[in-house]
Amino acid sequence: MGDLASQVASLHVGERELRRLIARYGSGIIAAAVDELIRYSETRMRARITEVPDGTYRWEDVLDDDGVSAGPIAIRAAITISGSDVVVDFTGTDPQVRGPINCMIGMTLGSVYYVLVAALDPHIPKNYGCYAPIRVIAPEGTIVHPRPPAPVAGRMETGHRIVDVLLGCLAQAVPDKVMAPFYGSTNHIILSGEDPQSGKTWVALEIQPGGWGGRPGLDGNDGWSAHMHNVQNVPIEIEETTYPLRVERYELLPGTGGAGRWRGGLGLRRELRLLTEAGHLTLHCDRVRFPAPACWGRPGRAGAVSRQPRHAVCARDRLQGDQRVARDGRSRALRLPGRRRLRHAVGARSRRRSARRGGAEDHDPGRGVSGTPAPSPARAASGTPGTAGGGAQWRFSKRATWRCGSRSVRTVSRS
Image (cartoon, rainbow, N blue to C red; front, side):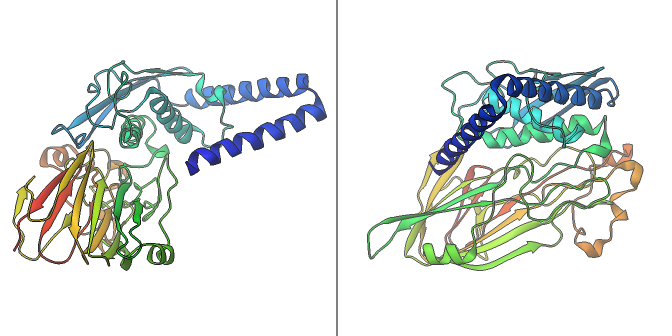
């Protein structure tokens, strides 16, 4: 509700200021200025599009799953440049799914507009004129244009994957204007429980980003929100004074950014301890099973979510003792015995390197890129740069354990 209230408040401010301008200059002058601004943005956008070589550029990537089916779920796109016009075609993208990761057409359009404007001219005034040269084909009934009543609560996963797919297309046309794949999407972690003294329920939400992809001339940013969201971490002081949690570690993870002349950004680790006798953990994450396809440099560290003992043996989808798993689309909820330690490490999913600028080995291993996987032999032999990956890792102390990999919960047997 806070998000909605702030948006309504911003509209009230905009209305007030627009009325003030009309009262000062008159409605005719204001309307003419708006029309001129839209024309200016369209002219400038078309000029930038003409700088891109004509042709059709294709790319595809996948989501791990939707929390209901086994996945993967493919997003396929083709960007066609013809003079000053652009067509973005999602034909071939997988059908809509039962889990809540379907992306409404409005958000799909927003992802397209974001990528093209950010890549071609990030300083252009943003308005309808920017989008006039762009036509989007998104077949109805697909994950990028679902039919009602498709569940859409986790649409950001798909929206962010659209961004990576479109950047993969543009990398073939304007490689010096785009970054490598990033961490994929934020990991949503909800810890909740009941205060034993007051009986009131508490809910703590963690939204953790990861590393950016490397960019022309620059390493990827470390542990920072990328692209279409601007989430921030929860300050330790607020978390510890508001919830029965203790933050025992918060750090960047060396070696998680993919290797390259300009490495991918480093991931984060945030270690929490649950101070009550019991609680629930709900997770929403991605980039655990399928790293990004080959685009530039080598991959960053893949994702994992675990509450792991020293001698655990994984048993997929098995419930142990007092652990109870509840499905909720792509999210899973698990009841935890008390005083568990939770380690959350968001991997840097992205990295960048152009084959023309030298191999991944050009980057100094001392800067935290050693140990990352090499490209597949087929891609390495052809000189194609490596793949992208990323993720998050949660670990708990004590014995009964479980793992969540991209919305699939795995329970690990007691030691």
